[in-house]
Amino acid sequence: MTILAVGPRKLPAGNTVEVWFDAGSGTTGQRVKVPVKRLALSDQDRGEGATALYEYESRDRLT
Image 1 (tube, rainbow, N blue to C red):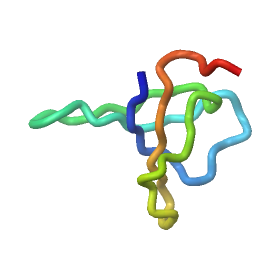
Image 2 (spheres, helix red, strand yellow; image 1 turned 180 degrees about the vertical axis):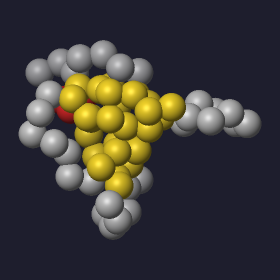
Image 3 (cartoon, rainbow, N blue to C red; image 1 turned 120 degrees about the horizontal axis):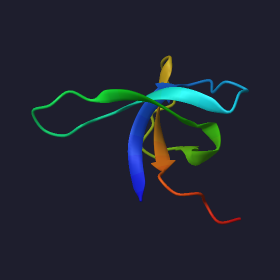
Image 4 (cartoon, one colour; image 1 turned 90 degrees about the vertical axis):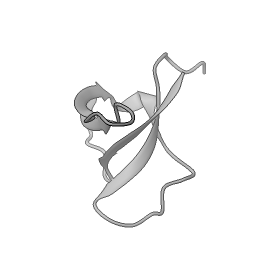
């Protein structure tokens, strides 16, 4: 399953990064540490600002 997440435009060199997931209509989202390898820059990202829109794969991607 792919979930949209907001995180820093420049991902850290480490294994994890803190991103923000939207919790849906009428509720607040939450910050979660996720593996960097499960994030891919979303086609919907505008390429500007300090944060970026990512697609988070909730399962390991097949290589």
